[in-house]
Amino acid sequence: MNATDRETILAWTQAATREARLVFHPSDAPQAREMQKFLDELSGLAPEVTVKREDPGMAPAPSIRLGNNLYFQTVPSGLELAPFLAALSGEAPALPGPVAKKLATLPAPAWFTVFVMPGCPHCPRAVLALLSLALESPRVRVTVVDGLLFPEKAAAFSVKSAPTVFLDGGGFSWTGAVDPGELAAVAADRDPALLGPDSLKAMTGEGEAEKLARLMADAGKFFPAFLDIAAHPLWSVRLGAMAAFEHLAALAPDLAAAAGDLLWERFLATDDTQAQGDLLYLLGQTGRADLIPRLEQIRDLSSRSAEVREAAADALEELAAARTLH
Image (cartoon, rainbow, N blue to C red; front, top):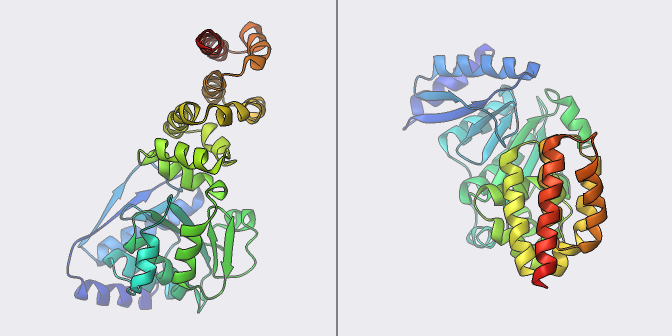
């Protein structure tokens, strides 16, 4: 943090009218140390800023969270500092009425990721545009990423310039100047089948497992990103996926059955024993009698863990019960 950044923070703190709280989600990544150093300096300059450390859970890590839907994977400085302080104050340009109404129709959470670069003159405006959306609707999630600080993440998104905005992990993207109205319209009108895993995680994490199932049933499609949350490393995410699939099996049994092959493929591609067991549970919910020989093989395979063999046996019981009912 240089002298200019300190002056900016001191000016901000003199104008602040309320206590500001933020959460730091740490990790073992080297960027976490730089972010922690920034937070230590920030709280030293601005006593009204309270910093709390929390396990990341489903949040990107390392990241600085403001409120419940704004994440910064940056060490705010220079041009990046003003939007961060605006977010900390809960201030952003007001949205026109039609844009706010459009946001109210979001069928599912919309997760935007915006990549910025130090010294980029256009990046602050893009961040403020997304900040306006996030402050208007809690269903909008925004992650601000410094592409130089997190080069691997920038490479994973194939970022070529800044600012670049992605929706649903890359299903939609914008480069350069962004229009909040356009972002809101695309988020509200997008095909639910294109929802990314972050949006699905947000739905199940907010107790909307049944709504996710209804979206799939109404669309007549099994959403591909569902496989990512069904095999997610976090048990809480998988639990939400299991709840959604149970609802799907009740609402659209044919659709749940059709997902059996995809679930089987993900089971074979997954190394996590606990995730394998939960995927087997989902296979038991499909009602697919043709899956019985495969599950019997897993149940009887001595090289499999006891946990996985037990999950296969439970899935076989579910399928047998389903056959009896029919």
